[in-house]
Length: 456
Image (cartoon, rainbow, N blue to C red; front, side, top):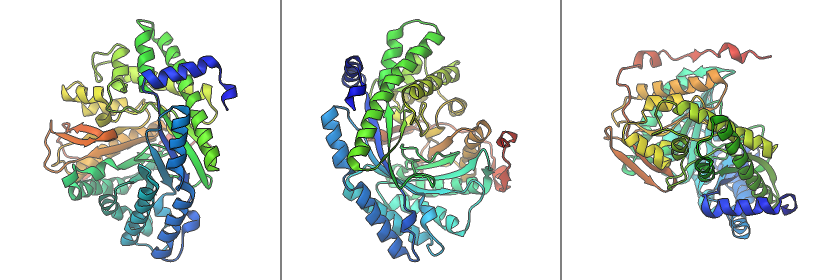
């Protein structure tokens, strides 16, 4: 593998690792569960547990060995599975799905992985009886497990927006916030509502192993905001076209390093290499920030006029640099802006530079959406649903993935701080428009797909 890399590339990679926070943000093993479906809850959960242990049993050990050998840190070792709602057959109800969640959590704990994604449902056009039971199980499943992450895809550019599901999402977000209020509404941080969800996303909380995916794959998420930030700072006052070229070349190098690690991991585990998601994903660590990149591009604070344009340039350059370096770029690949996980974004919210409305505008040009935003605890379920509907509509109309991960800590007020620690960081409760959308949300039904969906 090393034969295809020049000495200069290797030395540049070493510099990025040692000085600029380059790491493998996640190595995620995707596992198909379709052959685990049976006629009973007991047999289904046993088959699921056994299959996850069979394929992922050595995941952490192998990835840790590669970390030590190559000197590139793999920050998270994760698992994704077929959307669990699709494994229910005709007999599994709400309680049965919770039992499956517990079995998956047990396997993840024994393997030593950080998170397991795929406690998910795809209901963009409607939900059947089993999917309805599954969705109602999500709050309890996330409250009673440690490692399980969940997502629901409520819309797509082809299908439109399932507003019945959107209305239900507001209700369950509030429910899971209430039953995990002793942990700062932690269940909210493990739940994402999607439009146009992708099948090979290695990042949590939205990862699942799609129906068209192979039996088992390794998907890698490489994140280099610190590397890009260093390159932007070093570039000085060049014009924006030149800055785009510098970012592209930097991301090219990040991508090459990531594919090397991903392919070696897959080889040692005896499974297929899937994709490389090269999304810039920040952490609370100083210097590892999308917000700092925007500041070094010339903005006084994230949220200042020009922020959406700067983020658009950054996201486009990341994608172009990635596809130059690899034919296996997938996932979402762009720039994440999770407010609680980015020190500069947290500061911008704290001083009032970055509002919820400006964040929504920024999501039109970046990878995902309103990610890890906190709103007051007395926010009605219908307002949460309206927030979700607004963000999801951006994805549907623009043919891109958008999502909402919203924290609603019971009893919290604007300006309060919710601290999750670790990668999840801390969220500052932001103001949200107080005018009601309850009658709009209560209409239900389906917002039709946009005319751009008719592409055949």
